[in-house]
Length: 228
Image (tube, rainbow, N blue to C red; front, side):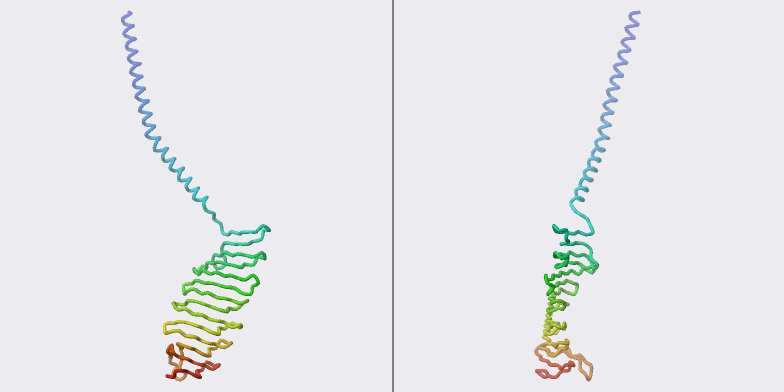
């Protein structure tokens, strides 16, 4: 009887030992499987959080708005940056709210700069367009001087008090010229290249650069030197 009990106990102990070994094996396998699955998932989560943080950091480094207004201590607008009826503009204002300097970019891509004196007596404008740059000086309302580079050639115009140019200097494909006009804008003298239309035939004639032409009030040639 004691022998049978001893055999039963030995068999039970062996079974328990086998179960413990199997349990340890399953535990190690489960731990290994958890590590294999959890590591990539944790990496993906870390990368996603890093991407979100980078996006938040990039977004926080800039300010997006349709208009920026700078005011002084009294709450008066001194600078405005934003859309304008013609494109985008930056306007600098005096204490009365009048724009004295304005930098703008039109919808057609033309950039311009306007400067206005404190007493409105004069102003300067600069333009950059596809045809060329232009610099203009104004009196109270009318231009006094224009300097431009038009289609590859320079020109300079001096204006009178009534608006029309009195003197125009230009360079063209045929050569330079100086035009002198009266107060109505009628050309009265040309030194250099002139483009004329013959009254009788209607043909167009271009004079030599070394030519002096004088005109009457109707634009008719009354003197030329040298004569052809």
